[in-house]
Length: 396
Image (cartoon, rainbow, N blue to C red; front, side):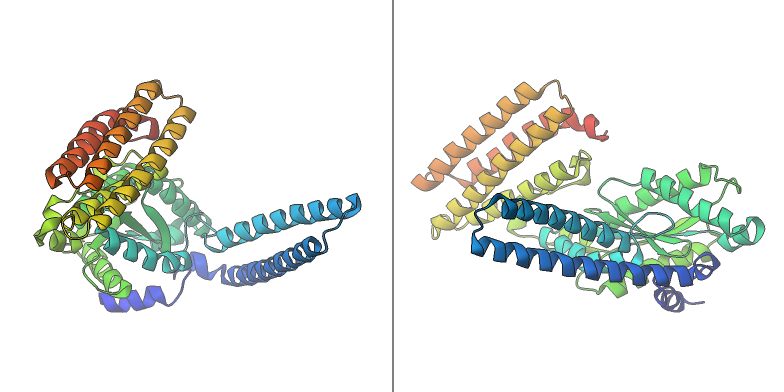
């Protein structure tokens, strides 16, 4: 069977194509219909309660009875909103394994691709398929097969990073979106994961293996074209003897590295800079983005100084917010060196304010800006002081 035919087969059903899923299709369909009905009614009730509260405020009730009724209505509204959030999460989750389902992947993929292009951060895909899974069902039964799938999810979650997204792609096949990662590092990640699975003892069946296809998104290709390349790599891994990783060796990371120009002065975010906490890592990446925007704006300081000052203002505002968030998280973790870390943050903000004053006076240079960003902010602070707390969040 060709890779195109295999892709068409997988895309024919959002819940997969193995006998495990076929046997439970009526229940899945009924459950989905029930979820949709509950969610729709919950949304209707929220809208109704919101309208009632709006009318009550317009009437400005004075007596305590009406105040009590409004408070009760607000409580019910909060409960309904929580119920909606729970239903939406349930509809996006695979009922058997607890990971994100195929429908949720279709929902988030465009946003991930847009973020990758905007931040010039590579995005890679792993397609993982259990070798000879049909024989597991035939030999040990479908319940054993279900346990294997759940166990595989646990091993896979432990083998990928916190920022990576795991989905059930269909049947015994799973997908991992490796964020801010090119095909080279994703290939290494996939090989580590393959070895972990091969060495794991699964319930009922003991050892099993997986085949993995890897592809990095490239240029303006559609999500379907990207997934076909990953599926072709998986097809080659299966055809090459299984229990192996095959990589489609092209992607945006190569194209961006080949480009030249003022981006040569940009700060380049690397996955090694991640500490494992989503908030801190996200704010660090945003800090790099704003720093690069300030570098770009510095080229216009002679003709449009207001743009340079605005870029510095945005960088300063985000830095202050990030430092506050980071300090709060470190305090929750009982970080022993929090006091000198706070002092370092204040020192950086003070130097940034001096830099801003120089920009407003027209005396700041590109060299002083790059020196502050590359040396003070990144080399001395992120590489040294921040790395000290990385073990708190699981990073080495």
